[in-house]
Length: 76
Image (cartoon, rainbow, N blue to C red; front, side):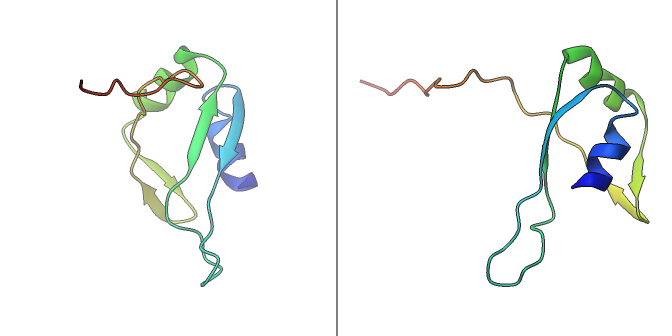
């Protein structure tokens, strides 16, 4: 987690970095969530063509912004 936070901090202020682990195997689940302070920080990350950390190429996806407590509308 610290390595991820340190790497992505070059693009902006990292508020939170979550790397979930599998309780059975003890290994991480090969994905993580990184929350930046501003939308511009996020854009800075996507301006770079590729990201490599500890020899592994990272595949990035931007999650759509969703406010806390927001729920999907249910069909009536």
